[in-house]
Length: 201
Image (cartoon, rainbow, N blue to C red; front, top):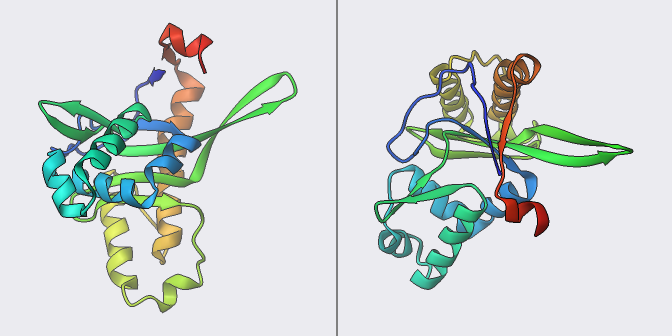
């Protein structure tokens, strides 16, 4: 199923990304993509390495397993195959969780999980609220903070947080609040559903 909407955030284009837009993944599909070996593949693809052979060589993962992972990442919304290579489907990945609340279904977009493609850092993955106590002791504090503020600037978002852990959460929250919420309040969503998905979960 895909949802197409217009977003009012300036999203940079990268050669490793097909659409340059925002994709909202289910929490299960996001969690699948951020497992260790899959993350290695996604990060290399973000840097423009699209060939399965090269991905296998650089990760030391057997080619058959690389193909299996790549096909699973396509099925779960992370990747698309084009001209023999593999590319990310979006520049920004947000994450949603579905909850049943009585007679209602609640779609909750999480502000502590997501991924962003960055020219210098590749694919930056935010996976849960990091302990703010860890950042001040980290030797890469200034470099990380500078990097996330640079990503924010490229998206037209000003980051005020002083630690990377808080800054990444602020960035994801801003993308949700400044883009997604405004759209959902003032626009509409088209669902494009494969009929087999409705009857074969």
